[in-house]
Length: 102
Image 1 (cartoon, helix red, strand yellow):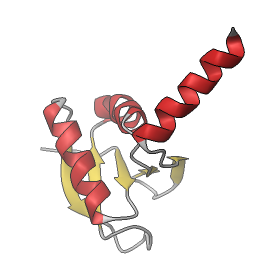
Image 2: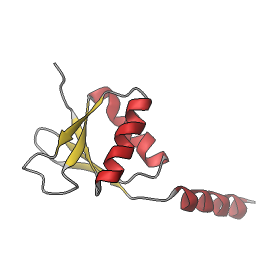
Image 3: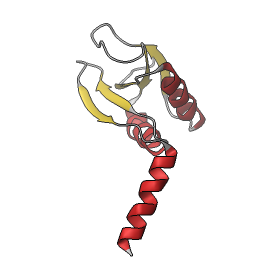
């Protein structure tokens, strides 16, 4: 039986589909779920994650610039959230940091 330890919510269906595709291609234990009634945020869809997939999924989505909110499942509590940075913005910031370090 599949047991969700956490949920990741997204602000749009486009981000949700992108996140699902990335996580599945990375072979993480995730599944598509509708957002529970107790949570009134997001696009209506979320990722359900097993305990071992939580950290790798969060790292992957942050690296790819996909914003999300991580919730525990029992009870539903916000654990962590990260903002969207476009890939171009991310590379720009990385170049700026490197130029300042010199």
